[in-house]
Length: 136
Image 1 (tube, rainbow, N blue to C red):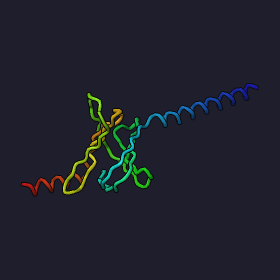
Image 2 (cartoon, rainbow, N blue to C red):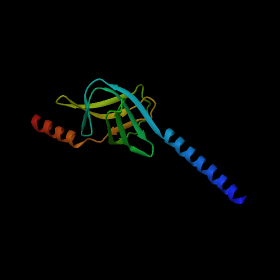
Image 3 (cartoon, rainbow, N blue to C red):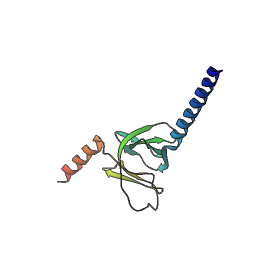
Image 4 (cartoon, one colour):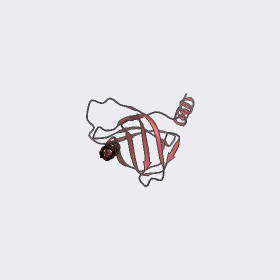
């Protein structure tokens, strides 16, 4: 009788734990869906124009994942959270452009869930140096 009661308590505890973890996984991420009408670079990858989902996990807020809406391609990059005092009027993606190549630089959402500046990848830094050297 005591053994049965222990098994029931263990089973109920396990169900509660699994339920709590799955609920946490669902509520601890944020997503932003955007349409980008041109090819662009994120990290060291060039992505085609299209619909993308930008997400972050609240446990690792310094990483953003940019993936195509059809889940064909995904890139994870490091980003710094921006401290903003004013609320965004609209969702905004900022791109840096050098010689026709666009690099995703900043993601800011109207809801305020996203306000990040992406770390420049090696390819972008190299292109900046080349442009600066040739303009001198």
